[in-house]
Length: 168
Image (cartoon, rainbow, N blue to C red; front, side):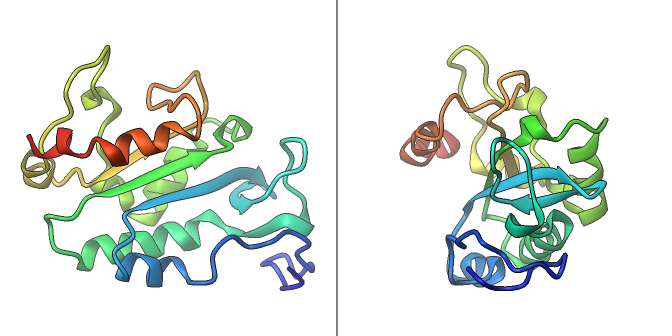
């Protein structure tokens, strides 16, 4: 709180991590929750107020952090998968807004396609399968209209507690 955002406004929202995303990924973190919102004709990392992003809570354009993630995945051993959780996507209303920012970051080449996500209790592919196909980035959203929807934030623990589905 009190830092300057990329808009040069004083941020009145608390950061929830002391380490950079790169440091966290280097330390072995493989699941990130990023709050992304439409702001200033772009997609930003932001804490929202009533579903809106304001200067006082806008940290930086999402592209910056997505490029950090891309750099980490590019350098990492192929056996590592990254799980990426998004909240607030219901506030990104621009057509293909999220796809555009992931394309621009270079992460789409690692994207695990929604079409391969298990439906109706189906099984996840194995880590070997995702590595062979280079689909090492799994992205979930909190928007119920999206196929990669995770019902509630508590559902994230389901994926971490049941990672054996990826190894079976």
